[in-house]
Length: 628
Image (cartoon, rainbow, N blue to C red; front, side):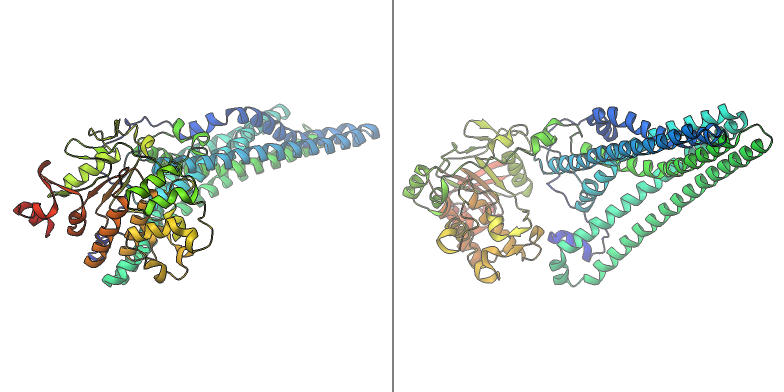
């Protein structure tokens, strides 16, 4: 948890907004239309539905026919004393049952397979959209994004579980009503009246259920966001001594979410109760009326048994259909939340770049290195070391970095000191490709649309960094060139030279003594089991291990003390000062400014001065910025 968010907890704020990326970026993609998620789900599985729906309807039709066939067997076989027809009827009922069960099993498996696939597609697509740097930055709590990408994606996909039984059930109920009407007009009218009343009840309660479910999901997402924020910032909260206030805030959020869930459950119960009352009353009326008509001689015994069987079957169908409004309300609400998140990100659910075919084979182009020998150059500061690394297959120079206000040539370490933090943010946005500001790597423009193609040449490490759940070795290997980390699971010592070099350049060698299992120590999500300085140094070591031809660092030493900062400055710049590497440091840290080959001082969006750090200290405005 960033310190400013922790301070908001301390000041009594009851919500913390966590952005996955800075929200100042201009949109990388045009604002997309918002196609319906449910339409996308149906369209993606239309072939499966074209086969499953007819077969599921046939399965339900067989179930409906069984009591009718039984009535015919009783009337024309048992009561007429026809043994042959009775035996054939019994065999036919057994065959019908077997066929119906087999059809049901096959259609159920197909619908469940499609449902699981769709859950996976929506989860992966949303995750890909959130992580894609070309997506628009969102102002949503991290917990809410997680809730939508998991719970809502799963719930929306239940559409494929619902359709294969709802549509066949509706058809079967209508067919049963037609059979009853043919058998006796009054029976058909009783069934039709009950169905009409049930439809009216469902039509009235569905909007309320949808609104209640939407409120429940929103409150649950708020509680999840609060819990996520609390866990990630526990160390900071303990340092500020505001744990009790944080607990009280989460307890309040949790109680609100609980009340929303209880209200939703109450309305769902009322809905189920009303539909059950309607169906029970209707079917009781059908059975009583059929019995009276039988006593009057209008219906035979076999028809009475068939009517009772059909009524029992219809009641089971209607009981299931009575839950459809609740299910539909939850699915449609979740689908809308998924669609809205896609829209906020500037993407769509059918974006071809977020399809499984693309995301499952797409990899981060980190470049290649010819095994450990190629990685050796990552920590070598001499020109000879650079040449040796290049000979071993390490990536060569990219042609430096050019911005409208400054340029960084290969072999140069340049520091950018900005009097206004907004100028620093603008420079980071430009080199990150969030905006098209005329920045280039060599002759290649850095634009929102093209920045992914530059990942093997350019690495921009922001000030607010993220660490992922995994070992220290895995953290360092996240962006390391392919081949560098072939020894990542080997023994300690010489086999970890690439990691040793990265830690040394980040002034983090002491972590191997502090962390209980060295490189195999597990780092929790966002480095929640580390101090701020430890997280920052591991992120810096990870950036160094990437050995990118062009490296941009934004305030990489704000969480360490002055002595550690000086050690980092010397080791980092020594590791990057090579003829085939260009480095830009966006910082005000005196130690880094002092070690840089050249310092560019920017004021009011323009370059005010340029030169060595000690020479610029004679400029009052520059000295004031550095001493802050």
